[in-house]
Length: 112
Length: 110
Image 1 (cartoon, rainbow over the protein chains, first blue to last red):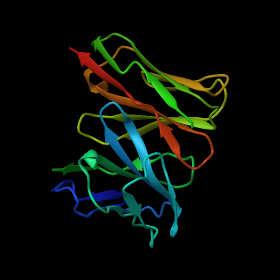
Image 2 (spheres, each protein chain N blue to C red):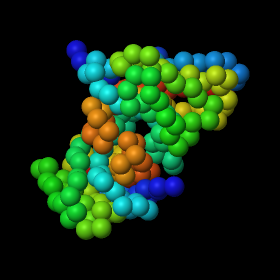
Image 3 (cartoon, rainbow over the protein chains, first blue to last red):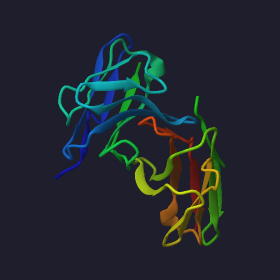
Image 4 (cartoon, rainbow over the protein chains, first blue to last red):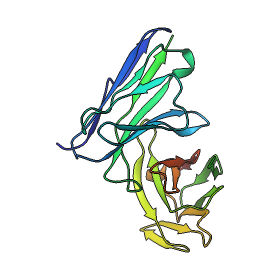
């Protein structure tokens, strides 16, 4: 089935470790986004991508790295995880800029 | 930078009562979207408003976009338990990214 999938759904790791969250979409949407969701802050944009090999920072990019070598994949890497990065991470895609976003089921990440 | 404020943060209503959430942007928006997130779920797109003063309806839900394109509202008539969740607005100002409001968490008491 077409859609947007995130993996893993749950992840527990330790401070200082590198963690990669995966996002894959089958719609061939141009735009992809990474958000984090924390109580009291809603959804905050970490990074977004307008097309393969084009990425840009959002509101809270520090401590995160993204790449987009293929249109369908948009992995998010925490290079050295910190406790403040404990959150629920959502990946989303949209056909064009300014069109409705379709969200994945999220990854719940806990950093001990 | 651009900010999108949403009020109230929480709302508890008795089933059958009406509910309204408001969204205010610090800058003029090109369009605004509304999303619903059920507990434990992911945000799901509800609607997009583009024109100044636009009003759209989806069954018991009424969405409005202000004349100045800086504010919006979502009104639910006669709430049901299926309306439980968090409602987010997301403002788009043309920079290829949306700024989400903090959300309004709706609880419906049967």
